[in-house]
Image (cartoon, rainbow, N blue to C red; front, side, top):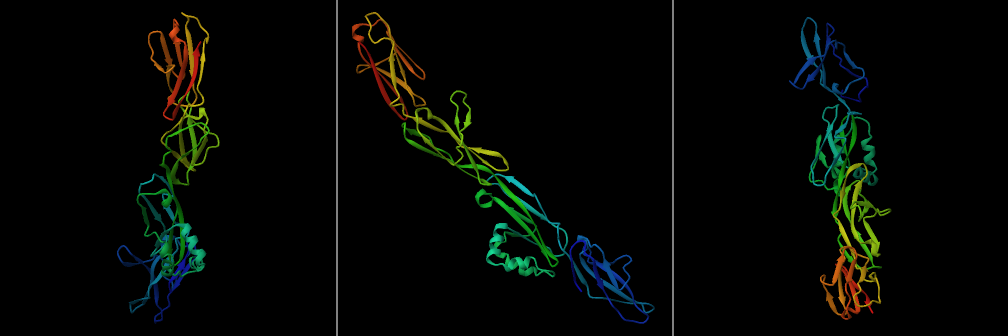
Length: 380
């Protein structure tokens, strides 16, 4: 009679024959490599017992019965001993960290047998199936002999692959990241193990540059794909050091800025995923703030006499990339002669050896890609 066992069980198979003189017995096991039954040493009783059966002791057994003197040998019907894969199922690798778009192969390794059937599936899909059909859990936990065909049929709609090897092609973190289980089923039992596919973050949407005015509200957006789901950290470039620094509390995929003049500059988001060292960084997004409303002009002396020198200083907020232009009354002023213009983050205009024609209104215009504004002063 066929037997079903877990590793460590005691298994006994028996054979009875009748003859005169009384028969002798020899138990044999099928060597599947050469398809020949071979004698088991010292197995010469009518019963054959294996204590603490091992994974590799599955197979076809029979007893050979011989009648002394007559020397005729007959054989029993073969008995199949099936050993479950209990506690032997492993997956190589037991986890993997990879990139979007790559291919991944998992190998399910098991002992026991024979006729191990492999079923790859998502644990979440099995949970959903069980919630809709509770009988599935009873089937998976049923005693031997296991109805292997019934299990295969019940799990067919959520089965990803059959066989010890399972490959995913062109990984997509959202669709493919997560856990995968390999179930090994034979007539003696059901055993499984689980592996996890982690996917390194990749930026799928970069923030875009913005041109804005003070007191406006601006939103920068950044999207990433990974498994586990990405975490976000927004950073702003320190305009002095040139290094990006984290913005406290800005950990959403969106960054909302209530624009002030000093919020101009470079922004970016960094996407991370728990348990993964590698991260992904978006392209830089430049926020340019219109200087209008922030421009101020000061003068070294508003009341002068002929031959004096006068210096106007123009400052502006907003940015980056503020440039400056000067006008006297309605006329553009160029650097040269008695007019000296020096511009960096601010601008100075020096009028030397003032003459009567120099009196009047002086206007400073500050401008960048977001807009422009003016402020005035004069010589009287």
